[in-house]
Length: 280
Image (cartoon, rainbow, N blue to C red; front, side, top):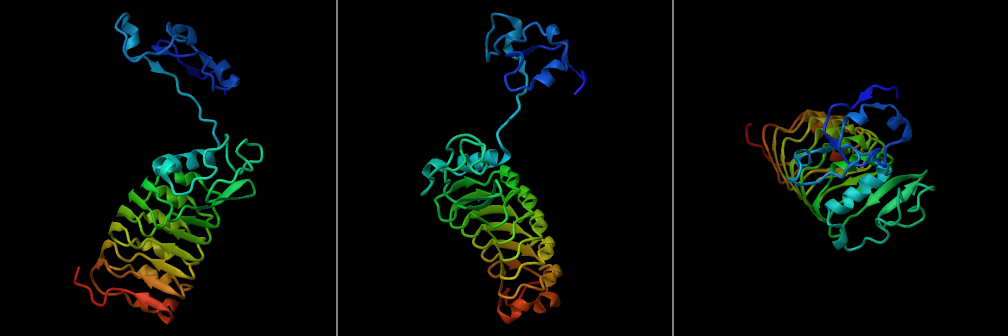
């Protein structure tokens, strides 16, 4: 970085240089001397001097590994201290899969590693409460299973799930209390080969047509026992490898059942759609 960052003529406070700033960045900053209170502690309320009431501290850089950020966010957002099983969680520093990390080699319950990355996260039936944080999208090394089924999670499914495009096996969210719409971004999990489970929640809105992009699914797609509405998307007919289960029952869909759905291989297995639908 060249000297393009000029912070002169502001009212900044806090330590200088910030402890987490790399030295090349500090050397490229101009104007630090023009902030008379830089290097002094920031305060919340101090009416002794005018400047101290609302000075703005400089940002710091989070040097934690992205996987560590994601796992910590999951732990804190889902009441980690009260999980049924949390062996190893938040041990050491860094990612539990990074050989150079002090957390490496410590088995975190439900976390599997491969090639230095988190490849599987299985926290099913583990007394999780709270919401699923957006940081889950940082676990881009996930390839096997992502399981949060059988808990008491609430709130929306984060759109950042669509970033987990390397997932190949199972994604289960059934048996929680998730609300809101099914993210269209789930259609980006195009390498998913076995199962997507969304049943037994409180999901609303339409069934995204983008789920028809999950053309590698072979075992099941389940979204039963929610409060989904609107017509069934004809794009589900693109799931030409889905040979076992398609369960969309116990929702509030309307319109006709698309002919394309009757042509998928799951009709040789088990397909559950509403027996009749009201006009949309």
